[in-house]
Every structure is written in structure tokens, then in C-alpha cells.
Image (spheres, rainbow, N blue to C red):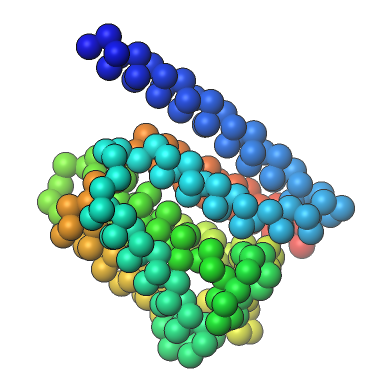
Amino acid sequence: MGIFKSHITLYSRYKRFVVAFFVIFYVVGFIGMALPISQPLFIKLVPVALLLSLIVILLFHQPAFDSKTILVFATIAVSGYFIEVIGVNTHLVFGHYAYGDALGVKLLHTPLLIGLNWLMLMYAGSNVTEQIKLNGWLRVLIASFLIMLYDLVLEKIAPALDMWHWENGIVPFRNYLAWFLITFLFQRLLKVTKVRTANSLAFIIVLMQVIFFLLLLILFYSTKQ
């Protein structure tokens, strides 16, 4: 029992340290984005921020990884990437858009990082709804709606960060519909396979991202007035 308590205490200390690190990380990132002289450099660091967020979230994953969990997570990441490949090359899924350079190395006109970003969002959405005492279908619907709201925020700031650009600068409704439906399928996959996403940091880190993007949106919008 003493060993178990010491493990929880150590885990709690690491959590506080990681939360403090990400607060500083995003504050510095916001300042760097706000200053014209440093903005190009910090835009290039966007892939680092997204990848670091996912790595830290997975480090705090509970319970321990098993083969089923790894397979389901890999399925989401790979499927998410190829859905984006189809979307950006055919314009049939989300609408007419093209990726910029902010998300790093691209293959088939699609950043390799985008599949991992799908995984991070699916994980965070599932993590939030696991804590709600509702039936599985309602949890899936709520997670899908929350992730669609995340995309709603991100779509407004993505062009300014050179993440992706929409034809004529207009985000079509079908983009949000596609996000909701794809997210719904991924969330059902997590529930059907009974893959747990217990994590004390996932929601906090993704919430920090949302606040970061919202502040950037306010900043960029105000400077254009």
C-alpha cells in the first residue's frame, strides 16, 4: 500500500510539472506568434507543439498499453491520415482546401502529422466523455460535438498560421458535417473495442490548445481592424 501511495504522489508531482510546463509553453508561443519578428519561427514550431502534446498525453495514458489499444490507436491515426489524403486530393470529403507548410513534412499533399492529430483529438474527446455517466451512444454524440467545436475554432485561425487554406477563404458546411461523422465513427470504434482513454492530462492539454487558438484568433482579428 505504501508503494502504491508513493507512486500516486510521484505521478501527481509529474502532472503538476507538466501542466506548468505547457502553460509556460503556450504563453511563450502566444507571445512569439504576436510579435511579427518572431512569428515565422513560431509558426514552424506548430508541428513540434502538436507532436509534443500527443506524446505527453500518451505518457499519462492509463491503464498500460496492450496490443488491442495500440492497434486501435494506429487504426485511427492511419485512417485519419488517409481520409485527409482523399479529402485534399479529391475535395470530396471536406471541400476544396490545400495544406500549407505549418504542419511539417507532407506526403501526397498531406502532412504526415495530421493522422496523429486525429488520434489526439479522438483520444481527448473519448477521455472527457468517459467521465460522464450516460449510455455509450450519448457519450459518442457528445464527444463528436465537442471535437467539431474544436474544429470550428481551428478553422478560423488555420489560414493565418499557414496550416491549410480554403478555396475563396470559405469553410463549407460539409467540412463540419464530415468532421462530425468521421469523429462519430472513430468514437464508436473506441467504445465497441472497449479501449479505455483514462488520462488526467488529455483534457487539460487540449483545452490549453483551444484557449491558445482562441487568443490568437482574437489577436489576429483585432490587428486587422
